[in-house]
Amino acid sequence: MTTLTPAIPLGLAIDLSGTASAHTRTFLHATRAWAAGTPGADLTLVSDDRSADGGERAAAELLRRGVRGVVGHYSSRAALAALPLYGTVGVPLLLPAATADTLPGPGRAHVGRLCASDADLHSALGDLTAPWRDAGRLAWHVETSHAAPEAAPAPRGPGTLQVVLGSEAFAREALARPAAPEERWLLVDDAGSPALLALSTPARPIQAFGNRSRWPVPPPRPEAMFYWETWCALDIAFQLASRGRHRVAGQSFNTTCGVLTFGDTGQAETAAHGVWEAPLPVG
Image (cartoon, rainbow, N blue to C red; front, side, top):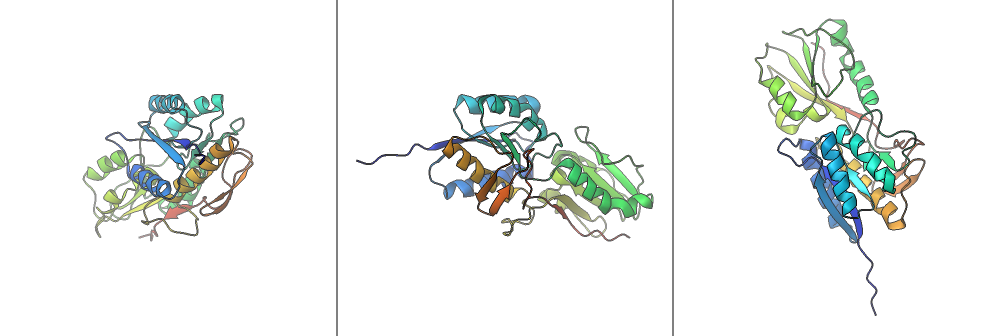
């Protein structure tokens, strides 16, 4: 007689709305590739619409379907709204891309983050843009849902650096405005989609800045930020759900890309921290 092992139910949450970013495509690519090589996983995908209300709805739906681990919520707004629901029932939440400084934190042992935080990103961004700031040639274009690392004037013209911090849609609007000649544009994190980088010209160079994996294996495409973070988050969620465990903080896990260790607050201490930047010569 053959005994069948029940499939392990895992939840996936990402923005599937019409405003979904390039990160959504990376998330779906990674989850499909992971699932193809992982028999025994039963995946349920829902949209969190990259919003607080959407995060709550997505979490409630996944819990209704009986998932035992969740990966996703690339949006910090959605993740912050969803995580208390998972904590109430002891379902682990693995965050490949949510960068808010309050994710994770004390009292949230069920939450683990595999990417760098906003504080890490802003610190590195400040170092990179310092020459333009000191020369008075740095301008910020900041979406209302984001915070700039520092206040700055908004100069335009040759030799200035225009930094866009926000969503892909917000960056597209900023780039659609008339540009002064010889301005450089730097698209930060979500803004740095391949479609927008393709608009770069010698007269208006466009480059990207954001999280970069320190995995030993590069993602399938250089611009695919959070690909391996998503893959290894699935590795960890599957292990926890298979064992009936939920604690991520203070634990180490074997993943496709090696051992990944989380600190006492649930922040990954190894491999996944880093910042990707294109060289930006001052000129």
